[in-house]
Image (cartoon, rainbow, N blue to C red):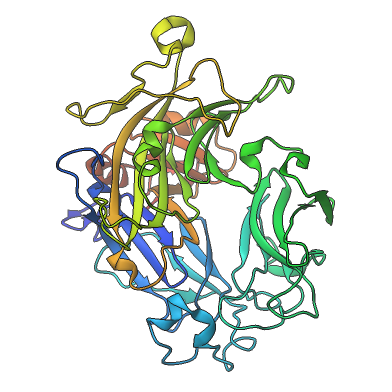
Length: 488
C-alpha cells in the first residue's frame, strides 16, 4: 500500500477524537492537544478547546436537540425539534421555546428522522456529511432517551425544548436492525397522552443495568421523585418507589449517577455523583460482598473548589485502562481565575490501575497514589473518604493523569454548556470471522496496541499516531481464515 501525507492510500491519519453532542452542535475534540494544566499552578490559564471539526446543526438545517449513539464506526442521531427558518442563533440556545417550531418539518416540527455520519476517514477539513437514514421512527421524539440493549435500539420521548405540544404516541419504541423495523412499546406511566408540555411527570434522569431501564421522573403534582423500571425481556413498566434506596441495584447504577466500566476490568465502575467523581468495585461473583468505593479527589479536586455551578457531566471510556470525565459549568465569581460569568468545560483524561494492597502498607494508607504523565508535575494525596457514600478501609486504584484542564466554550457559541452525549472513536478492525478465536485475534493485533473485541470487530487502542498508521498499512486487507479484514 502506498503511504502518503494523508496516511495510507489517501486516507487521513488517524487521530484520537472525543465527540460531543450539544443541543445545537456536534463537536470533535482533538485529544492529542489536551494538556495537564492544574488550577493551582502559577502558569494556569483557561485554554481554548482544541477542535478537530464541528457541525452547527441549526445552521445546516438539522433538528435541534438530537440524541446520539455509535455503532460500527457510524454515528446515529435521532429525533429532536426543527426551529422556524431564520430563528435567531442567540434566541434558539437560550430560550428555545420562543423560537417556535417549523410546522412543515416532520410532525409539527418534531423529528422522527434518523441521521447517520460515517466516522471513518474524517479529517479537520472534511465536511461532516450527515445523511438521513432509510428508516424513520414510528413517530417523532423530542429530546430522546436512546439506549442500545442486546443489539436493539430503545428510544423514549423526553420533554420538548421549544414549545408546548402533545407528545406523539407511541412515546416509547424499539428498532431491530436484524429486520430493519421499528416497533411500538408499552406507554410509560409518567407520559400523559392528553396533557401539554407541563405534564404530570417529567423525565429527569435514567440509567440502564443489564436489560432493565430505570427512570427518575419528577411529579408536577407533589414535586416528588418517582422511580420506574422497564425490563426489555418482560416488556412492562413498574413503579419501583419514591426513594433511590428502593432500586435493586448498587447506588452507582441508579439514575442519580452517570458512569462507565473500565474496559480492562469487569468490576471497576467510574462514575459522577453530582460534582464528585468516584470509583466503585462491584463484586462480580460473591453477591454477599459489599460494593467498595473510592473518591477520586485527584480527578475532581480542581473542580470542587471552584465557584462553578455545574451541569450534569459525562464519563467516556477511552479503551482498556483509560477514562475521560467532562464536566460543563458556568463561573460565578469575579475573582476566580476562570473569569466571571463564562461557560467552561472541565476535561480530564486518566489511566486506571488496580493496586495490590498486600504488597505495600503505604498503599493501604492511601499515600501518594496519584501519578502524572508529566514527571515534573506535583502529585496530590488521594483520599477516598466522603460522607456521600460508604467509605472503604483502603483505596483500590491508582490514577495516572494524562490531561487535565479548564477550556473555554467559544466554539459552542451562545448556547448553554449542556452535553447531550459524548463518546470516543478509535481505529476499528472490521469484517472479522465470527468463528475466529479470541486468542487468535489478540495474538495477531497485540503488537499494534491494546485489543478488545465485539462480534465481528476488534478495537485497538494505540500508544502513538505512528502505531495507528503502521497498523492500517500492515493489517488492512489481510485475511483471517478466508475473510479480508478492513481497518479504519
